[in-house]
Image 1 (cartoon, rainbow, N blue to C red):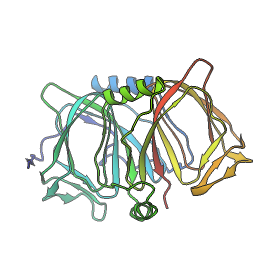
Image 2: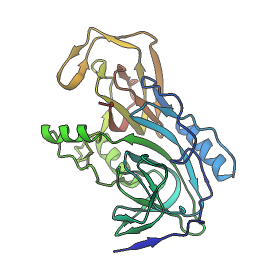
Image 3: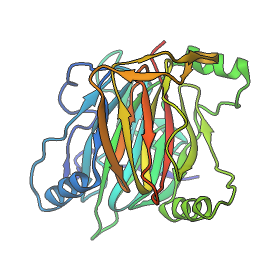
Image 4: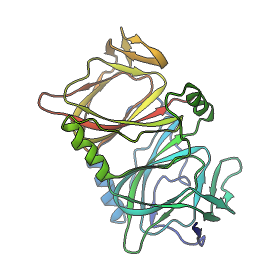
Length: 314
């Protein structure tokens, strides 16, 4: 068991749009999210050079593409978010992430916010995160960032709202046993192994995690276009493009689709402000709940991506 006691004066180098940052932008639940790898790299380089960035934050109400953070020193203290899970995409560098256990002596930052900081982290597990890793601290789980001397880390954070009622409903349906407090970590090397396997036509056993209000669902490989358009009324799709390229077509509504169970609609025609967005390896994108989309794969090309399902607020 490990205890971490940290002086309040210890601060990290530069962090933008963190939990203590500016107020969120207006909620835009139907806006498509797109963060190209080239722009993410540019933002990383600016932060590492000591510059300021303006991250294109997008808040959908039940999840928030919050920002990008750069740490050249360890965090000043542990923290805990009762109402939000943190989803991290490590873009550069490395860090030791201490997660779980018990946070003793912390103070709530604002009454009723569910945001706690300070105190002592007891019984945490240390996990090393490196560039290309995807990881997530569940809501209610304390954590602390330890940056070793001479190292830095830069990462993108997406906040996901905790929905206890939905977690219970998922458990009742028993579609997949939810593990709401489980730490998630997909190493870059492991993701590459999955990509290589599915590109060869092999079947993989992806270690998916379902927290009730969001699900690390699977790695998908497409060597041809979708059979038809699709729309998910209750879930947004978050994509981490791991390999290849694809064009995703989306628009305002779906006409002529057939609705099945759980608000899943297939087929029909996408109409209204139809947009085609090319995605390539390293991009992060997300189709909101209720927005129809279609995958276009050019002949001779393919795409492989990790999907995280984000529940619409219930």
